[in-house]
Length: 376
Image 1 (cartoon, rainbow, N blue to C red):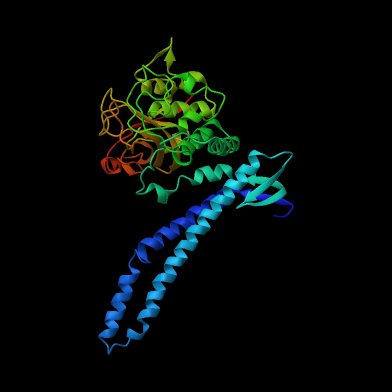
Image 2 (image 1 turned 90 degrees about the vertical axis):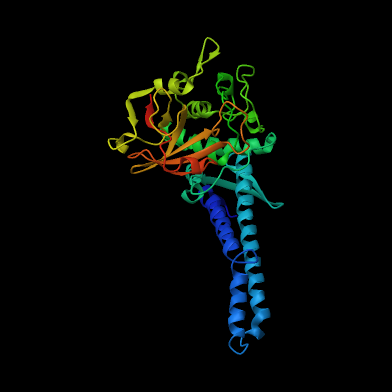
């Protein structure tokens, strides 16, 4: 390990993702589950049409398939080992004293290692992968609470990444990406996350947010300690973690939860910065950490509902919004797949270009979010 170990989390995590992605691509195009066996059979059959010239190679060609499969397995093992090392470094930093830690990898201790980490902000941003966004769907939500060890690891990643951010808006984007991509995905629950007790605890990440379950009915008037978010609860949590004032993200007045929370967040935004998507939209006046929203006072787009999210990426006229949605029936029992996701939008047309949620096919080519605004 040497005298000083410099850990670039971005490189370790991204290497694991890239290796695993390559293994998946190989598995779908080669090996026993892909096209390679069919291609080999085709080659052999063609050889038999030419005086049986390839029949003697049939066994060797079958071995090619086996070798490819073994290579895929080795790649997947290497990807897993990268994450074992990644988690070992995180554990070490959680217990670091005076810059010194003991790193344990697969049962082997490396004592007295000086740790200098870098790339946490880049690591979290790397979770917003354009290849993952295209065609992906939300992972299954948790069915039980996080262990203490798991929660501490997520807390450490989140704290380190937020500490490397340079502005409130950057913190908002990192918090949104973290909750959408890194932290275990949670189901949508209308009315979730509106009570300040859910947002103002001592812990940056409430451990109970890791305790999720399917089919959670809207019951916010009965229980103010829900363990997940709806869209405005998610946005409030992000703004609170980014350091915006309570007046910006709070919903509560005299102990009562407002029903129209999207409009309340918008009313706390910088009204001079509010823009509607279309030909006159100026992308220079939008940045990561801004909010995107739609509301049903007047139907502007193709969807008649209240919704809100956080802008986490911008490239020219294209923005990506992190949000949590519940599908087509937010007031009913939620589908298992409803939850966090990303939506990519052309701000000049308002059309959805890509979407990572299970409602993907219902949204692409339509106007979903309609406006953006900056927070005060």
